[in-house]
Image (tube, rainbow, N blue to C red; front, top):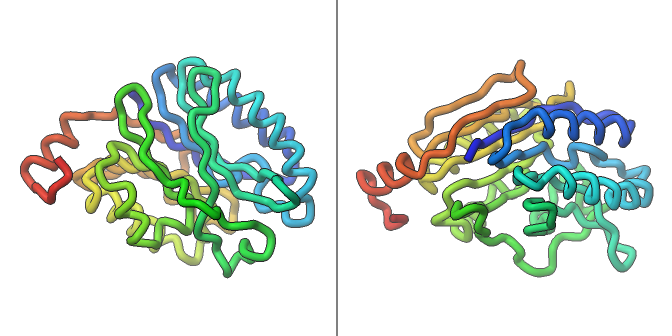
Length: 238
């Protein structure tokens, strides 16, 4: 499969953001795993949470339609029982294949004031066309205990809205995630002016495809590369 990271800006116009994302997805090849930045369509709309949650219903239906031959992953705002969640959706074959609420909320961004953290640990490895896929959402990247839960994944997704002041942290940790887990990492960060960009596709050997000036980053998945690194540097993941 093709591994695709989208590095896009998020404006205050939900409709415009959705149309932009749809056009980018349609331009990507079939048989791809496509990752968008965290809350790519609605952003951290703290002053419009109900509006954002209502618009998420449209996002879900529109992206399901585009997922017949592509796996699409992104997070959006969901409201349940008068609580808001930052929820990951993975769409494939016109269905919702997996959902996962953000567990570790970023206090410096006041996420803990507006969102409810997942009550149950929904981080797990799922299967897409024989590939083992796992996701850590933005700030969750910093927690080694969560890395333990995704050991053995072939591809790790990290949708992010990571600030420019900590750009080096994002790039260093996402590369370390690939090396420690001996897996491909798709890192997709926002391209907004106050965000760090640094989106990348990283191989199990730590080889980087990263370009802050590009909107679409694409690389080929290689099962052989995973098997090779796990065979020659055996840490018990083979």
